[in-house]
Image (cartoon, rainbow, N blue to C red; front, side, top):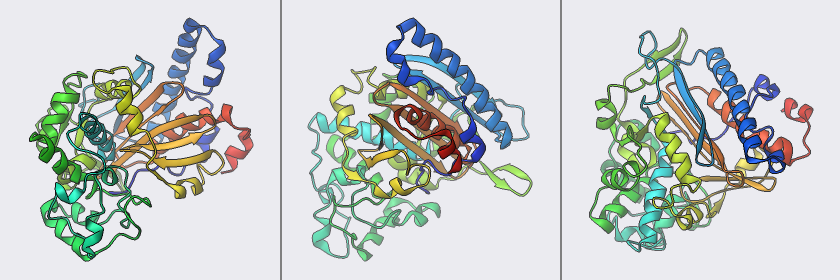
Length: 400
């Protein structure tokens, strides 16, 4: 899996002034009704922008939701589930979340850690005894926290190629005996899918309950995420599911739903609709404290490791003052706010979720195509905040 980062933003997207958050830092001087009216109007503008961008790239189908506090400001859909067929995407159409799944795994694990079912500094080998690095002493240094923060020290995306060949984790795990971390665990960042997914073993060994069942009982049901599920079988069982599409010389072509990253369920195995993602945004922003307590959210969004290379990306270099990773979440500092973000990309699907920690407004986008238009849309959401937080000019933005 390619780690989903807010990537190249096209020049015409940068020229747009239609995004919902252009006005946000002025909202402090507005009354609550005025704020709501302003947000609703900007949401309508974003909706027009969304559909224009989707049509411009001929994306088969997608959906978005904008949430302000515990209020759904806008939720809309676009296109069809399968190119060439009539079934339209609706609010309950299920998409693969790809790496946005990591936000669910980290949330579930953090809930359990706060219940003292295990501790962040527990050694992973206590739960996964078959894990071994080339240097055995390094295996004993790997802690549970390192799995969810991508701070194992290994080269990024270690053995993802085996996941892409539909190999189960049981066949991949022995490969780690051939390599060593490039730094001491906990000291450097390297995005992982295989190692991240070992949290499934930790959860089962600590509770006796499977990862999928924990998510259903502790998250999906109480949050009324009625279309959410884990795994290939659950996805295929839905009659209202989006098909994956890949780009070809003749446009987008629907392809078979591969099991590949479903073998790494905590990293990329969650499925959900845009109505589900509205609930997930609210929960992450603190509006379902009986499910995700303030303490759990604070722990997940506490930085564990810096992600310095993200500071050098041309889309961010003029705006970010800091970039890091917590537990299952990217943490980007822009002005006096932080953007809590994650994206996902797996064969035929893209997904993104982001929210302002200060303003408590967020967005989630789902697509059934491997298009970078999702980066343009999500980046506009983020960088329209920086328009008011930084002295950067429109000309500077347009030049990048």
